Length: 358
Image (tube, rainbow, N blue to C red; front, side, top):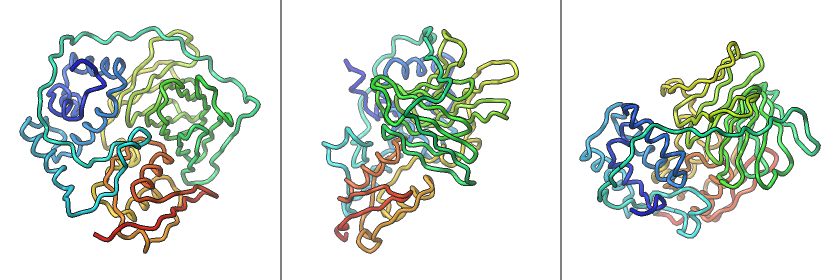
């Protein structure tokens, strides 16, 4: 395989080292290899995310399954997509603007390339972006004074679930080479992917840099710690006042913690029970009635969905919506069921003629 752009989901599923890493049983060399791999080859992120979702869906995620077990369970998932059940999916020409839809993955076959290097990860010295210190002209402030989470749609299409007693500051339009926001309190980000326009979150003593992923930041003034927890993808975390410092790469189910007492930044793995329901949610659907999809999204994002339940009662969805911002999730769903949507006055309205009865 000459290009990492050619990596497929089955390649990762059939690699024992990858499975060790996903299930938390990797050796230090394996852990270092996959950290380095994510940093060096971000183009493989989508295939890796899908493979991880499938592995975590197996009945015994705490164990490292055999190759035979991986094939059997993967085929079982594929076989759920029976030809008798209509699947309303994205046309191939729209895949570049949404997430991959599981129609068929084919037989898990082929071999993994020989990994020539298992060297220690080399973290480059990186110039941290100067923090924002005051409110700029043309910036907006959204505060959540309620007792419920508040959905905030950012100018680039990214979405944020802002926790109570928190606020977010952002410009009316982002600069062409970067996207900057200031968080006070806690928020869960789903950042729209754009490698040419990195996304920076300034949260008290910590700067978080991503190009597109989902993660949570807790940075209340009264807390002893600032925490950055990653759901999908990878993020770089910096100490705010250190102009040059090795960036800490935080991976899924890991947490970067800044200790205010001694001004230290360290990394730890996060156990599944410690993750919030949102951080564990995969947004994976197999022939799921569209009503259930809307109910899940409404509960997750705290916004009501308005639609004609009778017209859409025969619609179902097979897709992995993963870490995409809400608007991209809605784009995918609406293309799949041939509908449109509008977000207005804190509500999502779905307009569609419906789907053919199976």
